[in-house]
Amino acid sequence: MAREVLVTAGWIAAVVIIAAVTDALRGKIYNWVTLPLLVLGPAWHFTTRGLDGLWFSLAGLGTMIGILIALTLVAGPGFKGGDLKLLAAIGALGGWHFVLWALLFTSLSGLVLAVPVMIRRGIFAYTLKNMAVNLSMRYGGGRRDVAVSEGSRGGKLPYGICIALGTLIALYTPGLHW
Image (tube, rainbow, N blue to C red):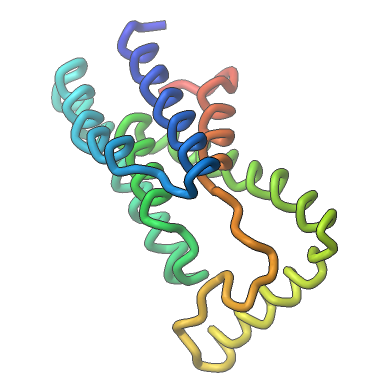
């Protein structure tokens, strides 16, 4: 494996682990973790692979931004600022192909982590009902300002943990090449 790929994978792993820890402990993913990578990712890929590397990085960043805008339009504001910047940094470092796999594994990680907690708390059925009510208010009732978690009794899941888990799975999935 090329040195550049190992360095990039190391940066991604370090960033998502730091973000997961700070999100779990303090409920926050700090700008000092994510913002430098939005500049470092394209700069790193440009210096190691020239214009092709720069386009690789910008395509990952653009793909992530496009997906996050689409999710916000469909489901409303569900991600916090730190989550968004972390995902954008992963896109800038990993490229568009990697970021799609990281998002897939992140969403599956969210299910794996959240569903057992909801079942244990006895709020799984309530959560499904609340989601249906919010979606009907948003799309059937004409209220566009309904947040995904409006009226929820479930509490908040530090999604930085899910992003870290999904991204690490994507990093170490055999056959995934960037």
